[in-house]
Image (tube, rainbow, N blue to C red; front, side, top):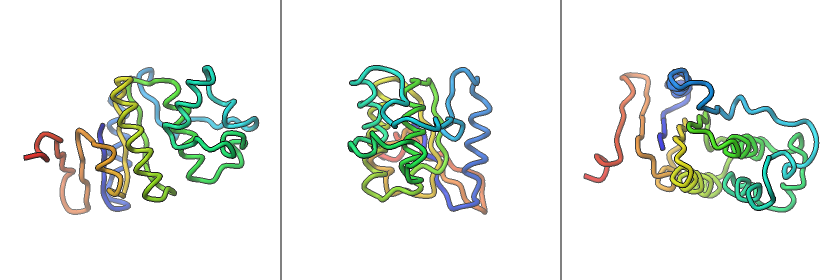
Length: 165
């Protein structure tokens, strides 16, 4: 788990794109590139059986019945972000990139999804690299590497082992 944090305009997205450029396309998914199907229900948009689909949607924080039956086109911006996240997780990529994580989500939902992502990464061996201007969910995400960006100095990586000392 890698979390890139910093103020808006501090270079998080650029750093995320540069990191993505170093990973073979066949091994990575960027949720910004996930296509949203135009019709049908959220529930029907994911491959797999009932249990797997519900598990992936719950991991992304989309587990209430109303949302499951909604068309992706009718989702709010926060729900649509999480739907793209669910679609990306369903493909079980070795590496997943997500910019603007937590955007449009309240603190509780962001923390729940962050915790779910941590468990998903451990279970499936997925490297998840997120960029955000928020830190309120960082404890639940438990990133192995926290990268801080700002306007005045190079990005700084803080490793989990060093944060404990």
